[in-house]
Length: 299
Image 1 (cartoon, rainbow, N blue to C red):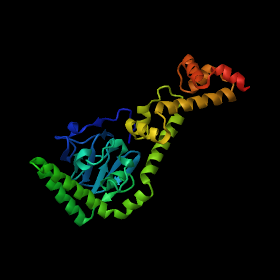
Image 2: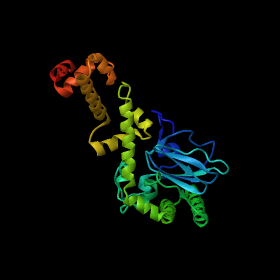
Image 3: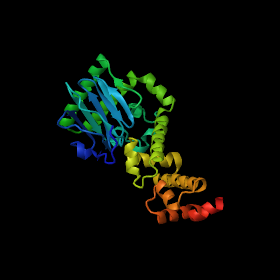
Image 4: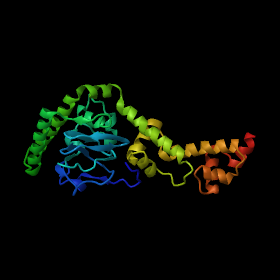
């Protein structure tokens, strides 16, 4: 997945005819051509030949007769499937999980006992949900039923659509019960989050000298949305992205002031500050003394 600071984000009304649920075919004329994210849930079905899918920082195969489950705000990209194409189901959180009043950014922290419907979405980066003949036939029948329902909305249709969604998710959960339960028991979601934060930390370390280093660039380079990265950082470290970067820059500045004879202006540049005066001001705010005095006091 190509890193970009401009990964588009879509709302339901931008990509769907209604705000709660929509099902449509996916083909060359209506498919995304690159990484993107959306504010709603999505299920994609591969009705054609094998391809691949990229979700977050993970690349996995996307075989024929398989489903992909995508959480809100998760950066992803699935190329157009050849020889048969694909199918998209978009729906909002309120339709599937009206009992959950949490932000979509907190869905990965909801215990599966409270919302087992989330299991395929939570572990899409670890599993490929390929269905066999009987299960695939059942899935195709559910797709067709949802098409008819979505086309001819009447009183009770919303509840009927939710029932079909639950049947589809339940079908997959039943087929993959053992690996899903094992992943839940091993806290695979927590490991995935730590891996993502490790990628972020490595990127920041390598680009600390770049004055243009910012949240959007780092989020895109590490296959996260800015909202996810901000949210996870607060949960894991209690700090904002800006606080984390400044802390690292100040640590590097202290090391260079103590361990080298480089001029303060050069050290400012190595720490990502284009302006020496601004560097000195931020250093004094953090340490109580300007850089030159700090150096003298360490000798």
